[in-house]
Length: 129
Image (cartoon, rainbow, N blue to C red; front, top):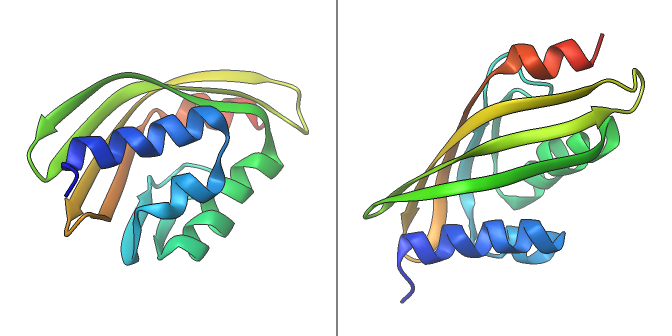
């Protein structure tokens, strides 16, 4: 069985390839995915389809070139912490943003069970007005 860090790294590798199917492949049906309050798609979504619709698809509709650039992964066994940067251009305003971000992942039984985002929501909000 793959280690938690390998599963999370595979998610980011799929993100870099823009491969949604591979991004969702290791997400458990009961995974709780939380986007930070104040973020455009804030909330907690359960399961791959809710996550796709309310996070990945929603961000793609609102932003051109929305990206996450991974700087480093920290291995804490079944808990993984990712540090990096978001960037993008809001489609309606044409304004760009860059925001520092941390993701906290929980993996069990070879599946992603929980994800929580921590980011500078003000930077993103400023691009939207």
